[in-house]
Length: 403
Image 1 (cartoon, rainbow, N blue to C red):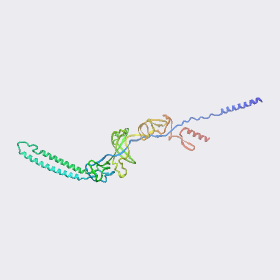
Image 2: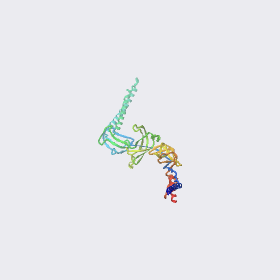
Image 3: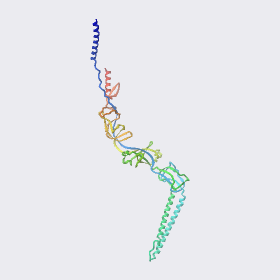
Image 4: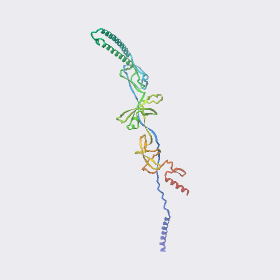
């Protein structure tokens, strides 16, 4: 009995250990899943060439090409003022703006006319005296006559008096004409400093005129911008924008001086008749702020990409094998968030438009919108297979359902 009590527990323990190892030997090891390789997903932009003419942007203030101070050339009382001779008034070339009392100048003109008539009469008389003297000396054979004897100095004096009288007449006529103040060109009246009944002294400013035949805009440019212009921009067309209105201009000159403060050079654009369309509500008033686009060189066939896609002169592209590659490109110009590329890319290249971390040339990529990507069915929905792991997961689920 004592032996049985000892052997029975040992037998049970032995059977348990044997059963454990037997069952362990029959159990199959868990199936190892192959390691999943998840590709980086990217979106792309397809490169297309396009013709482009470069432009250079600038800005400026519209001003008159000519500005004139209207000055009285003779003095007198103001007897007439034109209704248009007022701040903001428009006048045409030759319009009468004001008149000065002409009475004194009319008297001067009459006196000058009388002096001229007297000088002419004196000259005729002196010519006759000279003829008489010459005839008298023709009978004298003993000696030659002198110029004084022939009255030549007296004749020259009368001729000089005649010229002086003619000049005085012209001056008197000019002074009389100057009593009428006329517009020198088509103009906008910027200011007027006289009134009816006032006295205008010679040299006094009567008003200020701005020519409306042409307007000008000084356009500042950085030195590096001139390489995009033909002939330093002279003769180039300019589109000026003020509010919602567009105006056509042309570059007429380069000031050829760099400003000491801004370090900018200035081109000058001319606008013909900025006040021509007053009734059309599209005038370009002097003092308007405008933005300008100056026509530049023709760049040919170029690529235009977002500026952030160019790094250190390189662009990341997706190769036909769905791998990453870098293309060295020549950037013609950076402009308003865009890069204008003149060489380095081919037509149809797929430029990567996604951020890549730890990107290495040759690495495999997954194109999000790849038209050749296989399509799988997943729980009744049709979706593109973004990677191999998703395809395997779908296949496993379908097999479990069929089992």
